[in-house]
Image (cartoon, rainbow, N blue to C red; front, side):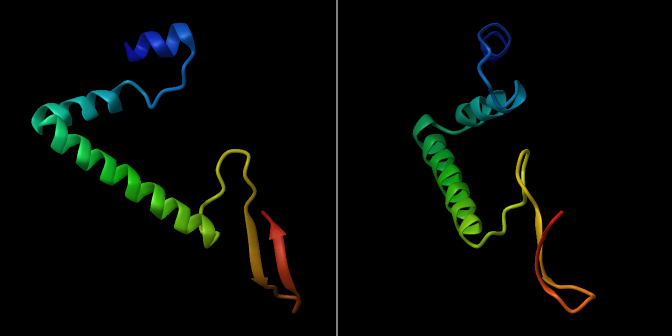
Length: 82
């Protein structure tokens, strides 16, 4: 189903392997326990990402800009785009 949605419909997915791993994890645990663990992991990941974003510690992704800020050899300080 993931492959059909990705190829025919054009929906961006997280690949074909990750949904299978998540489904197997739900099979090994009960649905309720698996859903709780899944939501805790996703929630903590979003919280950490939000915290790192507020501290400007996230790496620049596609289309992002990377800057170096600090003291330079010529004695100047500031930020330069890499």
